[in-house]
Length: 202
Image (tube, rainbow, N blue to C red; front, side, top):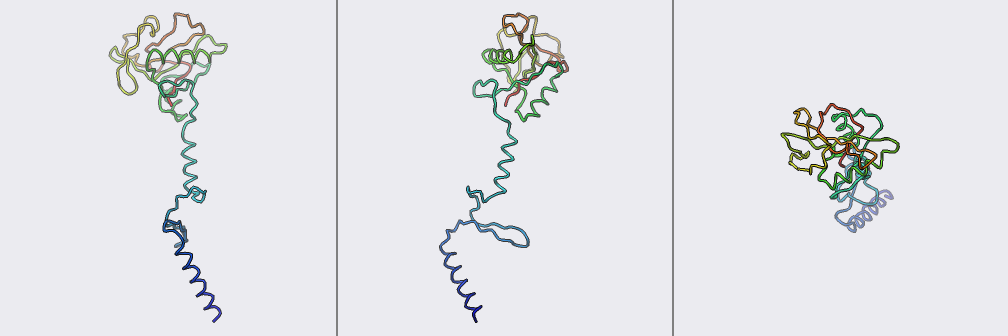
C-alpha cells in the first residue's frame, strides 16, 4: 500500500513539472542502449558535448590566419627556406599541407611591390630568394589561378622576360637584398625548376 501511494505521489509530482517545462526542452533518454534526445538540444551551456567536439575539430582544421601581407582583404603567407629545392608541384604541396587555399596570385603592381618588400625583409644574411606564385604564362598572357587574364607593366618583369618557350608556364620571382638590383622581377619558368619557397594565399 505504501509503495502504491509513493508511486502515485511520484507520478503526480512528475506530471506537475512536465506541465511547467517549456515544449522545446531537451530530454535525453536511453533507448535500446543508445542515447536519444528530443526537443531543443542545441544549448550553449556545454551540455551538447558532441557538437562542441565537432566545432573544436573544425576550428583546428582551419589554417591559422597569420598574414605576411594583406592586400584587398586577402591574406598571404610566404614560406621560404635557404635550400633551393622547391619545384612548382612542391610549392602546391606546401600550401596544401598548411591547409592554405592555393599558391598565391600576384594581382597587380602594388601587390607585387608589397610581396617583394616582405620577402626582402625575410632574407637575413642571404643575398636573394626565389619564390613561386600561382600565376601562369600561357599564349603570351599572364593568367590568374581563376583563369582570368591580367597584364603587368614591363618593369615588373625580370630583364629579358617573358620567355617565349612553351614549357615555361609558371611564374616565380627572385627577390634580392638590394632593392635597386636590376636582376629581379617576375619570370616564366618550367614547373620542375627549383626555388626557395612559395607564396600561399589563405
